[in-house]
Length: 167
Image (tube, rainbow, N blue to C red; front, side, top):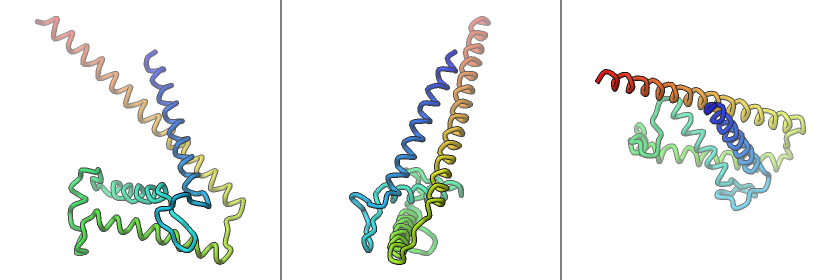
């Protein structure tokens, strides 16, 4: 019974997470950026977009096996022969990515290049699919975690009772 309630709570949390992610994606993809942190030729980058690029960089590094937590020594280590720390090197890389994005937006506007309605719909479907599958995967992993935690608690209680009965 308790597990069912936890599953419902987890489902609600996953749904809220999916809605928050979807809202952030829509806000960062809007044509007009309010309070841009970087601008070029009439185009702007929002703080959310910068954070998105930064999180993708950190995700790529984490997939390669680096400890990218905020307190990790990885960030203070030198990056090859660049003379920069990893923090400086990857911050510059994120800023360069944002600059390239701005330049591409400006070029597309100048050339009159726009995405078709079909392409925009396909993008929306892909975002919805990704959010749904991510939420389901998160729900599954949290459910397994809570199940294994409850099992460990039951095993520990059984062990404690058996130890008490022998003393």
